[in-house]
Each structure stands twice: as structure tokens, then as C-alpha cells.
Length: 324
Image (cartoon, rainbow, N blue to C red):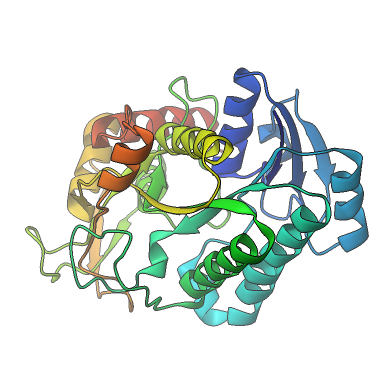
């Protein structure tokens, strides 16, 4: 297949590109490199450096290649940043996605996979969270993604665009050999932040220890990036076979607390870095765990690498090799 990956220089996008090429697909990548890394893109991919809002340049990419599918990762990912600058998120995440969807319509691309988020649910009223849970985002990041899901549903009804929205829980981990991994700047995710504390013997900041959980810290569902990428392959196969619009949670159905995560980083690294306990951050829910039964039952999804020890081991391998 000929596939366009937007945001293919980012964390998940770069793993996706590598996986697609490994199965024989011809892959084009669009990335502005504003927050991505050119050296993360597989050398066999055809790379186009541009912003999604550059209509004429993006249209040229579409019109010169008849894509079978678009896998759309390009977007900003920080809940905290979105609360400070909502316009940035609605412009980049929502308007940028609409632009790509319009290009698909103009160029008869009929399959679209969207990188969504569990943030569309907001504070859950039911754990684990099923796909039919009410959507009530508590920040502009989640809202910007939910708006794209709604846009896709209309393009499906009116123009026949088949789509799958994959609502990620917490993408994590790295390549088994440590050759690829998570490199955000600034980094906000707990596992790389804890590893950074270990590598530099810094304090790790633990936000909130009074949640209604077993040990008082937030509980989250972590999905290894290799398993997450495989979910996209299964979703793509679904769209090719059965036209329509689909929404899937991508998680494991098991949660780990912040304390468990930090203790695992200490175990894997062998470094007992200090922890400073701080007040809660606003908007953090007690527990966010996926009901992943739908993607398991419908697509045969079976995570292989998403136990906490494997996630942290692979992340440690990557960050310890690439620490500056």
C-alpha cells in the first residue's frame, strides 16, 4: 500500500513509519520538524518537510501520489500547554486535521486513521472506560481531538471516508534494542521524567499523593509504543476490509500507579533517586484505565510488550544510551 504518515518524525509516528516499511508499504511522511526529529524517520520513507496548513505544498504531495490511506499523528500533545494556549491547539490539532481530511476528499483517499486520546473522556464516571463512555474533555487538548472525531464522522456520512479513531491511553516504552524512543522537548511524561531523575540523580516530583487509589497516587493504563503501532496496522486492515467509521480504545485494561512506575524505574536503573511529594495538578483524575475489550474482540489486538517492566526496561535502554 501507499501510505501517508503525518507527524512521522515524532515519537509514535516514527515507529509507525518503520513498521509500515517493514511490511512492504511505500511510505510518505509529512512533518514540519517543529517538534519532530528528522533522524527518527526511516531512510526508506519519502520525507516532505512542511506544515499541514501550507495548502498548496500539501496538495502537491497528495496530487502526485495516489495514497491508499492516511495515518494522522501530527498534533500537539500537552494538556498543560493547551490550557495555557487553547488557540494553538485548536489551530494545529483541529484545523490542521481538517485540512488533511479535505485533501483526502479532493484526492479520493478513502481510508483515514486518526491519533486520538483518552483525554476525550475527561474525568471518568466508570472504570475501566468503554468507548461509549460520555465524552467531556477537561482541557483544550482533549477537546481539539474530540472535534476531529466529530469532523471525521461527518465526512464518513457525506463523502464515504472510512476512518478509525484510536483513543490512546498512555503511550510509552521504546524499541527493544534502545535504538528509538521518546524524545519530547519539553518532556512531560512520567516514565522519561523518572528516568531523567535517575540519570542525573535529581529529585523526581510526585504530584499528588491523596488520590482515591490504593497508594494515593494516580493510576494510569500504559501501552507500549510497539503494541500501539500494531493497533494501527490492525485498524488499517479493518478499514480496507470493512468500510465505515470506528472508534477503539488502545490500552491494556490494567493500571499502574505513579508510585509503582517510579519504583520500577528505580529497580531497572538501580538508582535510588529522591522523590519530592507536591500538591496535585489540576485536572488529574484518580484513575484512567481502558476497557480494551472492543479492539481485542473486533481486531484481535493482543499487546505483547505492555507490562510495566518491559515498558520501563526499553525506555531505560533508550534514554541511558541517548542521555546528554
